[in-house]
Length: 149
Image 1 (spheres, rainbow, N blue to C red):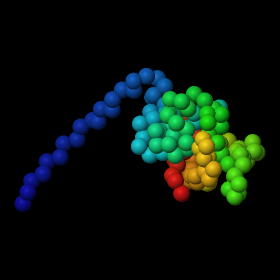
Image 2 (tube, rainbow, N blue to C red):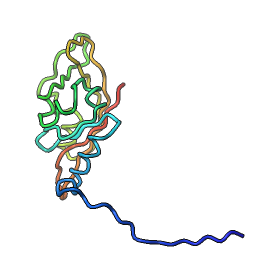
Image 3 (spheres, one colour):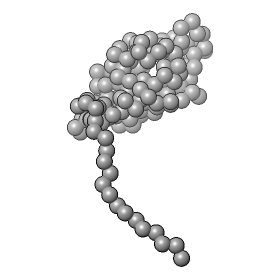
């Protein structure tokens, strides 16, 4: 019969590099920036705080550094409707996209987006799943995972 000894010890987590990274929102920001999956993090003012490179590619936004710090809907994201001849969404319609809906409602949100890149006629359909990100019990932003449909 084999003999196994088990020894328990404390787990030492590395200290946070700065105050911002130690909160929930700051931690998500770092993860989104380094993620291989298409994802996006916006703050309560709808400013893009972090976006993955694959998220930029999927949303036709160029490079992450070109989008970070800009409002989500003013950073080059062009959302169009699902009609045969796509036209840009109105402000009333854009308020219902998952990242903004999760931010304003404080609940999970899911929906399809039709994104049109520069010079593109047809656009691409993107599935977006968003969740609010809390800091000290209040909604500080929203985290969105994206996938091509």
